[in-house]
Length: 338
Ligand code: NAD
Ligand code: UDP
Image (cartoon, rainbow, N blue to C red):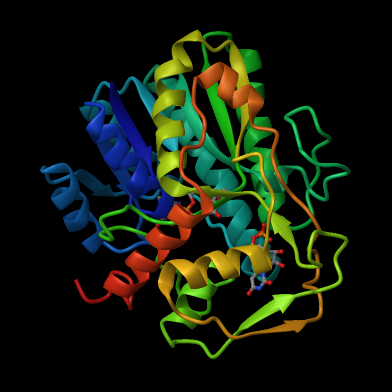
């Protein structure tokens, strides 16, 4: 298929572009590089054997999108382009609403004008807010606890409404749980700006000696060892799920939300120990107060995605840690030095 990948230069998008190329799909990347770096494109060329067709385009720019759609007959769009930092979204909510929601509206309008009616959308487990029980299935109540989460919820609703209004529109929202890891080559991975918010990149930077120690947010949660439990999913498994979703879009009626997780909870201490084994480095840590807004346990019931996509996770926590560490070791400053 001929696919427009918005936000394809980012962490999950870049891995998905490799998976798409391996399956023989033709990809055009549209990215404004607000949270990615053009050197990723050279890495993609090395991995796929072909320079990617990438454009510096902001999805809020209707004219630029119209030109892109005029020049190609896309079969589908994969939409990763969004701002994603929870803390930042609390400080700059309007930027998040503008970038994420206005961007999605502009993209949907451009798709409609070009008669492209198949979409795979990057959603998140954040749409479940504070889950009432685990594992979480797609029928669990939806809510939001911060502006970023609200943008994801609204974007899903927008897409759902477009599907209702136009029965020919086919969309899958993939609700990712906790993506981690990197391509096993060590050529592409997650390159956070500044101090990482998320656990795995923070552990990587402690292991690399860039940060002194991990702060574990709470040791008194009602979990297996008192630390928070999440459903970590290898980004390579996630990338494969996008390929499956794209190829199944044709059979979808309306808007289909699907959880993407391993269906298994891992505590902070369990991840830390697995990382120590994978890296051979000790990770100093200190248990501090709980982080505002955190919850004890979040993990998916991924059975609907398994059933409807014919996909399931293949890579375990050891592979996640090994690949994250390889990426960190080979690229101590992300893409900065390429
Ligand atoms: P990322 O920041 O690495 O990738 C997003 C890409 O979109 C970046 O390359 C950025 O430059 C681009 N972008 C942002 N706004 C844009 C705009 N207006 N126009 C064009 N390009 C734009 O993030 P990621 O981790 O790869 O996440 C991809 C998607 O998955 C996002 O929508 C995110 O909300 C969602 N998601 C991520 C996680 C996670 O933990 N990484 C979890 C759940 C959902
Ligand atoms: N966490 C932590 N220290 C950190 C970052 C995260 O203890 O520096 C914990 C956090 O409390 C949660 C888990 O690690 O229990 C995963 O956090 P992350 O921010 O990666 O994902 P999210 O909480 O958004 O699911």
